Amino acid sequence: MKVAGYLGAVCAVIGAVFPSFTVIVIIAAFFPHLQPGNKILLGAFAGVRACIAGLIMVTAYRMLKRSVKNVLEAAFIILCLVLLISRVNPAFIIIGAMPLGCLYVAWTDRRLKNAEKNLVSASNANGPNEESTAEGKGGEK
Amino acid sequence: MTHLFLTFVKYGLLCFGGGYMLIPLLLSDFVGEGKVFTSEEFGNLVSIAQVTPGPVGINTATYVGYLQGAFLGALLATFGLVVPSLILGSAAVTGINRWKDTFAVRGILRGTRLASIAMILFAVTVFWGMSIFTASIPWNYLIKWVTFQHPEAVQGFGFSWEGCLICVVCFLLMLKTKVPTTVLILGSAAAGAVFALI
Image 1 (cartoon, rainbow over the protein chains, first blue to last red):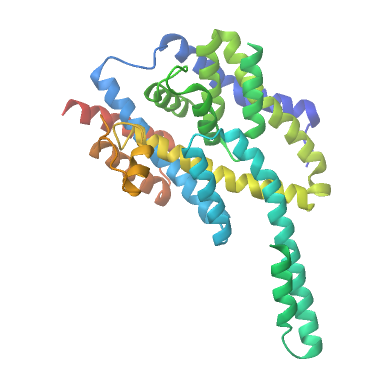
Image 2 (cartoon, each protein chain N blue to C red):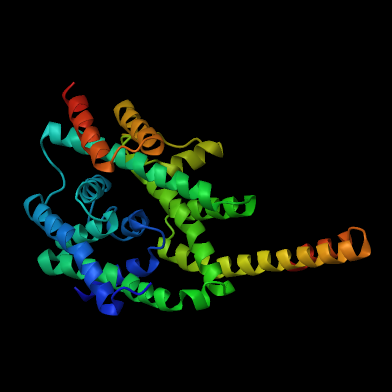
């Protein structure tokens, strides 16, 4: 699906960024203090902050629903959240999540493979092969 | 200036999963006592970034960059945030079919996806502290309270029913209907202004 190559990517990014860049720079130049003294304006800002809280909640809810598949994943998210709340630098959390994710994927892959193998051997031997399932799970932990 | 640029390159590298991911990263570097913004100022900044057309993450970066180093700062921050994803994006387009099934790529994507959900939930708690509560959520107090340690009372922390109302209404409208974000934001601004007058 190559449309216009690398130059195309650069142009697309500049095109996407330029208008909002201009608008933001103008706003930042004329509204530098971010702390309006006007009561009505303060109220409006409080309203928008509440709205954004709602919008982020929607994003969070959709991501949770789509991505979290089991208790282990939920526990990992809670662990990350606790670390974030205790002011651990989020950069470390993202970087730390990468190798952990690899381990996790390797583990689930192997479990899947073992399960398939068991299924094959079970249908061959005409009976469930429980011992090797337990071994496959225990060995990885 | 170089520092500003590199900071945003770092953010660009770490922002898996969307613009809101930038909020916890910015919070830890720019917001708090002795740093650039108070949490209220930061909330207003993100509000402006959200109202302005364009991606929230990039708008926030431009704004922070402008406040840090005027026009050049805005340019460097925006550019810094975009460069890593530009390079990674191009790499992904050329290599995605070859690598997407390797366990390293799947593992990194899986791990960062789960971590970014935690980041976005954290962003939610931070914005609650600026909207449905009158101050950021006092976690230390809560921990002590849960563990029966008789904490000292927290000053200035309270519940704002106006904020809570706006937040819940926006959440439900966004989830259940197809009201455009801009309408929601303008409506909330109007509602907030009206509540302030009453």
